[in-house]
Length: 473
Ligand code: BG6
Image (tube, rainbow, N blue to C red):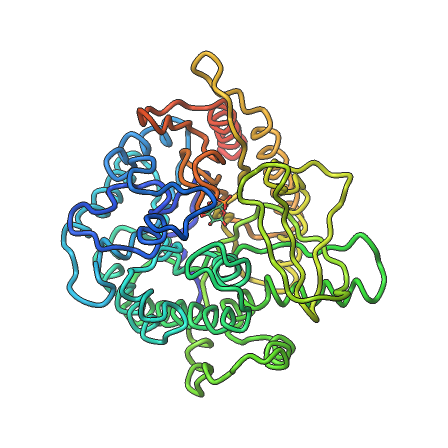
């Protein structure tokens, strides 16, 4: 790993929140923006679970200043957002759209004006449609296109952004796209997943190399959704299942981004599953080694419980409706199955409320990848909030966040190098295939009027940050 530029980074702990372009911006066809795969998917009949779209979403494209001001008023000093590739290079590979650059320049300047550090993700699930139609992440040309897009962004904003993130969640994105099949291209074939994840990681590494060769100041990372993998039974078969699940969810991304190599056991396993490994080119190994990250962006929501694989075909299913008739299921043939602890609380989408996941994953990463700083780039919980007399009393969200923040502090006390914590999400937004009912925001958005109302969790977070500043000043 390259040593971070100590002069420009991390003088202060980052306390903030996060969003992603397609989920909140709206303005889907404004100012020369091209179509993304999510625009097209949401406008199609394939989007049949919650058939809504991000055309307007939270209207952050027009209201970003209000949203950033509210962050600052709530004592937040950091904002993670993503750039929509289709605004910058509308067809993915051709001409650069100046109005797209101008928009993000204004967002970044607004952050600085309010004393909020901008943390910029280059790619958060929304791919320019022409690249998607050309095979998306299964086509190496997308890697070339990403490298160029990243360079355009570094050149445009490198003077005013010190925290970059190449891609968001290569694991979860490709799991949904090629495992569960609920994100475009809606495929259920893990062998194709491995091809896509490989190219996403290669694109990230090539962007990191470009960032360094361009002499840009600041730090560059990758955002990984990582999970402590646990079992309810302690025996050899369960430990084997946990090891395989760790390769499947975590190490296939983190080993590559941090150490620059894929775990050998992982490569052997996917090859024995019949994956065509010809996507691996000889010269890539050096790129992965050169393109290791400065810090890991870590999205922490829960743990993954596993048990040994027993029988049947691979079957992954997600509860995207939040009702009792829908369940989550993960069976990966020859690898593991997921398990459920009947004693723990879950949200309506079946996500376990398990704050200790924060401590466990941080300690695990500390031990596996010593010397790698971490920023918690997402942590939050989705609920159907209820408005009472114009207010949202989201005690459940406060309890969740407080629990995770306490566990983060415990990990810091035990030597984990955590540099920041960002709540998902800054405002209510489009929850991908889950639609708009599943809300994560610190600030409520009325999706009819687009009015903003801070929730109780926003006020709790503001007070928490103020108290931390008193302790450290
Ligand atoms: C993360 C993503 O996986 O989790 C976000 O980076 C996403 O984009 C968040 O919104 C919550 O997941 P979901 O599917 O409930 O919206």
